[in-house]
Length: 222
Image 1 (spheres, rainbow, N blue to C red):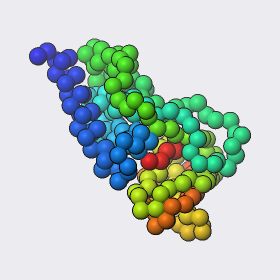
Image 2 (tube, rainbow, N blue to C red):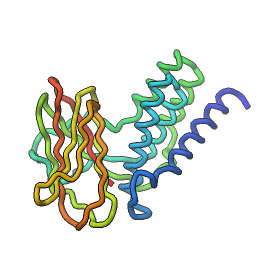
Image 3 (cartoon, one colour):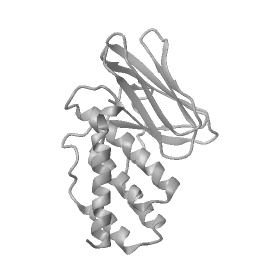
Image 4 (tube, rainbow, N blue to C red):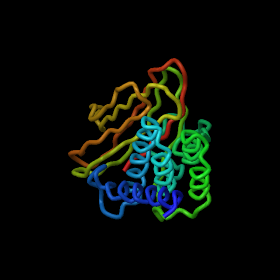
């Protein structure tokens, strides 16, 4: 087996292993396109970050493939503060830039470049019906809220956000009474809040930008 085929096999194996771990994100109903798509988004970001840490172009290609296979599309999650605001078109959940990054960290390898082109032009073999995500711009030291996200009592609920840049964005989830049920307040641009609601009902999600510069984020749920 030549080098290109070995690398392609490694990418496929990594994607298969990642896909097999999808249920670990939460206890969602089987055959739930939204939950499955979000699980692939989360896993792809984990692979991406590991690829950056280890300068591993094969992991980066695997991350891009998983994100492509998620089939995530822009939509509306809950009710935003300003529904008529201009929607950014930066594609926070995009994957093509990761292919370019794989080539860069490989030192311009023609083999990696060829595999990146294969992923870019191939028909996705991932989810037939992907989920949706919301994309918004959050100003420096500002807040954005998405209201009336409905979750089912007794079933695991997950809210995930990812920033485009390096802003420190925190997440807070409140129930219908205004009580805080989940939060993530580290210094990253990633947030993942999971909990099991006691009853079915609406929840509000607020993102707060702790940085002195704005950023674009994507938000999705299971």
